[in-house]
Structure formats: C-alpha cells, structure tokens
Image (cartoon, rainbow, N blue to C red; front, side, top):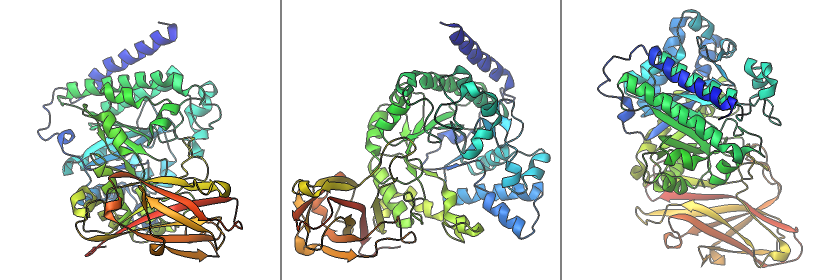
Length: 542
C-alpha cells in the first residue's frame, strides 16, 4: 500500500473511532417503531432551500413575521403537508459544493447565502435552530423516514466561489468548472467525514448520494479506470452507517445512490452500480435523468440487477418535460409514469425538483399560482398503481435534450432516416403496459413528423402490426410550434391513430415508420418526434 493509501485508511478508521464517541444516544434503546422498517412507496428529494423558499418569500412580500418561530413553523408545516400527501421517505440536501446550508458543521463550510435566498433564515440560525433537526423531528412525529442527501459534485454557478474549490486548485476537475476530481483521496475523505458528522449530530435514517448533480466525478478519460475509487468510498460510508446503527441499537441505516437511468451512462461515468448492489452497499437506487421525466427508463434492467438482494429501485419523476418546453407534466403524466415504473418492478417512486409545480406563485414561469401545497396531492394516488386503471393517463416519448445531456449521452428519442433510405425507415421503442383490455378504454398514439412533401405518405406499424392507412389522421401545421406551445420547431405533419390492445405487449413496443410513397420533393431527412400515447378509460376520472 502506498503512502496515500495508508493515509486514506488511517483517516477512515479515525472516522469510525470518533463516531463511536460522538453518538450521544449510544446507550439508548432503539425506538420501537423504527422508521427504517416501514414500507416505502413514495420518496421526495429536496435541495437546500426550495421546500420553503416560496413560502418565506411570500411572507416577506406581505410583510409578515420572519422571526425564528415563524420560520420554524413554515418548515414544520411543509413537512406536515408531505405527511398528508402520503410521503414515506423525506430526503433533504444538506451538503452541496462541499458546503452545508445548515450551521455548525466542522467538516463543511457554512453556506451563508442561505440567509439571503431564504428570508428569515438569518434569525432562525442566530436563534440556534437548525433546519435538519426541525425536519428530522417533524418526520419522526409522522413516522416518515428522514435522510440527508449529498450532492456529490454540484456545479451550479456559485460552486466556483465555494471556499474548498477556491483554495484547492489542484483538486479541481479539468473541463468542469466548479467540480472537484474524486480521484483525489482528500476529496473522497471529505465526503466520508461529513457523513460521519451528520450521524454525530442528528439521528437520521440514512444518507442519499446524489450523483446526478453533476454526473461527472472524474475526467471522462479516467472515469472507467477510477470506478473502484468510488466503490471503495461507498464501502467506507456503508461501514460508517453500520457502525452508527449498531451504536444506536438500530437494525439498519439506509444508503442510497441517485444515478443515471442507463447502465451505459453509469459505466462511462465511473459508477459501478453492479458492485454497489451486489456487495449490499446500497439499500435503494434512484435511476434518473438530470432534469426531465423519462417515460422510457429501463427500470426492469435495474430491477433485474437488484434481484436476490435487498436493494430496491425507485425511478425518478421530474416535473419538467424536455429542454426548452415551457410547461410541466400534468397529473395524467404522473399516472402514466407510475404505472410504467411499478409494472417494471419498481418498489416505489422518487420525486425530484417538485418546486417547479408552484413557481408562478412567486412570479416564475412554471407551475401553478396556487400549486403549494395543492400539487402534493397529485402524488397520493400514485402509491396505489392498481387504482390508476380507471384514471386517464398520458405517456410522453420526447427528445429530452437538444444534443447531449449533462451525463454526456444523447437522448434523442426520435425517428430519423434519409429519404433515400425511406423503404427501410426507422423505429423507436415505446415502453407501455397497457395490454389488459379491462377496464374498457381507448388508446391513441400521435406524433409529429418533419421533412415530408404533401404527397409523401408514411406507412406505420407497431410490433409488426400494420396500422391501416384509413385509420390514420394526418394534418399539416404550417406555423410549426412556438415557444409557448412546446419545444419550438418548424412546420410539421401530425399523425394520429388508435391503438388496439392486442397489438401491444408489456414493456418495449416497437413503432416502425417507413416512406411508403416518395414524391421526391421533400427534405433529405425525415424525422418523427414527440410521440404521445393517451389512455382514456370509458369512465375516466381526471
């Protein structure tokens, strides 16, 4: 073992030794109803400030009190609303950019700008109160699990001003401003040390490692070979959690990883999820896009990876649809996502960035003016997937990003072929679980297509079943789609047709498009995009 490795191990064992002394509740009997043992269907992850920022901003505008007591009540009320909505696991980001918005940590600098962004947090912290303890205690009152989240390499613009980043240029990640390189033991040790201190100060139920902020822990050319470094760090965090659980007399404390939604992305970023799962290092994983809801996540692949272990899969739902789209998903989209994820074997759902559902309340451009706390109720029905059969739902298979996502992978989700290859065409897989004909319902598929002349004709089939041409409606939108209607695009044709249950199969359904009649006048490239499958039960509730 080299000198760096020996120092790394000494640091780790030192953390474990100090942890045993730190825990003030070491000799207390375990709580009879340990939240970690409760069934979990619904997880909500919150960043450092978005849970309460709108409420406090409105209090400021209305000149209402923002003293410590008032701010504490706002935080407690927010947790109460989650309990009413049926949230089982509440996750709060208490560490980003190697700083914490909560005061008093020795292993992380205090992110003092929380006092500016969240009105009233200055008085709250000056009074000796801490949002982590407030939320943890409130969650415990409701029997909810409470976990602390770490954003592993957050690169929001402010990250370049974080003290640890500024003072340690040798630890920075080249090509990713604001990011730090996890190949350095000192960076990884900071993470482990913070986890240990969280467990010293707060009786939390676990830790969530959010790798989706900002995906890259290593230089892209070194990520695969450096994957064992992250796995080793995960082992150490697992050991710290196990030691804390043992000292507290608790059966287990949870460890989670928020990861990309494909094995390909995980591998190229240095996330050896297979090792984390098979070594029993993590208790649940949250496959996720960086910013949008992906109706095509291969949840079943992660479920298969976890088979034979206790690790559970909680795929992620985001309020946003795609880059440059002005609006959010609606309740029918949440239902479609939940139905597909549960049918794929997910244990539950993970919700991220939910504050976008009430941004208009404080003058933003998304969500509802009265979205808080009303939109939390949208989540309640998702916990019972069998009850969604009689409700309308809509699946969106759209290009999530313009070119590449922050993980470095293109997520086009479109059909594209050159006119000269029209007879071959192209196909797209659509994950659907709508084969049961009961209760009675209608299924409609529509999509947009560009590059055709008026006399061109496309032929469509799904899973080898030809769609009768006379059942397909085609209309032309000469104005295209503007920024208020969706992701902007030029003139397009819209295709709409009914789907039959017998054409479908559970899981990936292959929609193939070919150029059946070529007028020779259209564009060189023909594309199909924005595939939407609407499900309307005969007696659907909205």
